[in-house]
Amino acid sequence: MYEYRELIEAARAARENAYAPFSHFQVGAAVRTRAGRLIGGCNVENVSYGLTVCAERVAIFKAISEGEREFDAIAVVTDADRLTPPCGACRQIIWEMCGNVDVVLANLKGQMEIHRMKDLLPLPFDKSSF
Ligand code: THU
Image 1 (spheres, rainbow, N blue to C red):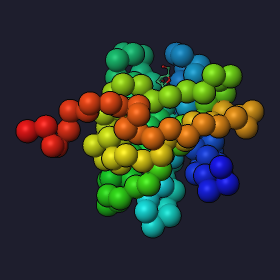
Image 2 (image 1 turned 45 degrees about the vertical axis):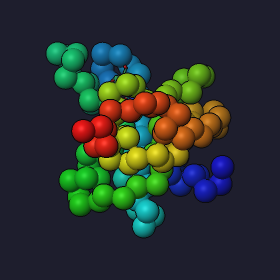
Image 3 (image 1 turned 90 degrees about the horizontal axis):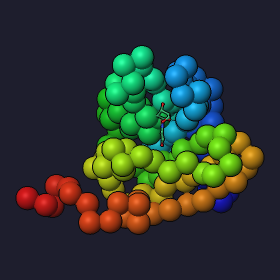
Image 4 (image 1 turned 180 degrees about the horizontal axis):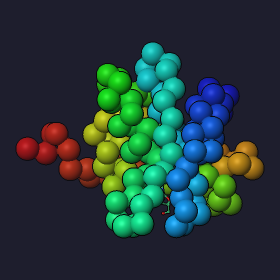
């Protein structure tokens, strides 16, 4: 959708910086603040594979560390034919920091889909759980 063109472009640009020498799967993400600021992130892998951090979390943690707290969308861009949804760990983080935002999945061919975060993480464990 047109309203997400720039967000997708920010994620696509962040993907260029992906550090993915092990999987060779480059991922870019970008969050949009309610004020309209776009903050990108890429996946950062490590030879100790479990230390890898996904693009979504890099983007969110960058934004949080710069003082941002209110978001209305996140985009994920890869080169895959089948659009890449956030992993389970990232869904938990997105829910905590962004809430029920639009999750925009896109690829380099120009395909895109929009999902609501609550549909990607039904029955979440969150601040209201205790
Ligand atoms: N990855 C992401 O960055 N985000 C996703 O949504 C899916 C997976 C990364 C982690 C790893 O660097 C590579 O993709 C392969 O799993």
